[in-house]
Length: 170
Image (cartoon, rainbow, N blue to C red):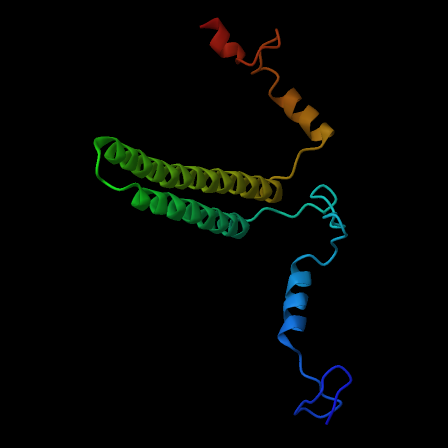
């Protein structure tokens, strides 16, 4: 059997198999589906996208990507350190500086990511408490607020400060 673009192929005429060049070109296009000539993309800006709720899982995924970048940087530094050699004291000093740089990269990343997770956990905890408070004790109407102020007016000072009247006389 013969195909239009091939001289001879073992596949039947209606069933053409993909060649490597077609697969590679499809793979290249896959990453940039809307790219125009000159490197201009049609993808929207981050501002155009609807805001999604930040979750702990998304933060952890971002942290994994950041760790991958840090590991790549560390690998580059370690490769550089191996190429330095050990003959002179200045080379030993340079190796020590690279080791310190690697140590700082790791510790900074660990501290920053731990801080981000802690801040996120505190924020979500406060939001959860606020939601529970709304469910347990819904906000008072203006009439109810006025009634409560009238009931406890004798406890509040007359000059408008927050201290009770009993505490001011002491």
